[in-house]
Length: 71
Image 1 (cartoon, rainbow, N blue to C red):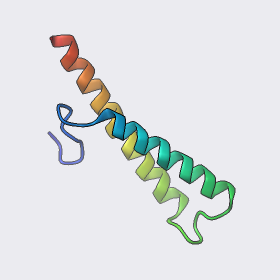
Image 2: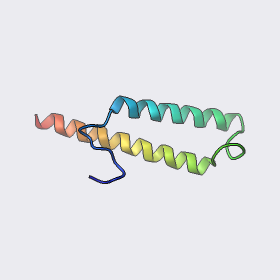
Image 3: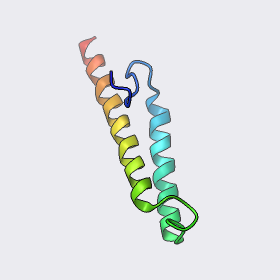
Image 4: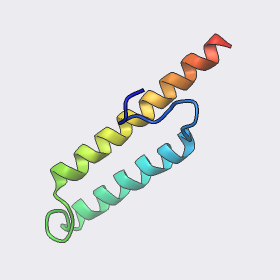
């Protein structure tokens, strides 16, 4: 297992979904209010982190689906 991806057997998919939703909502709100790049990290950095977190969630979801289909 890569150090960047959680173990699909122990990862909490609900928590990852919540993190993605919270981060995307906060980024959208900050962008609309003109706060990105002033008081907070840049849009590029935050969107990259969001893409990475989404990739982790999708990896865990696919791994758990693959494990469930083997059962």
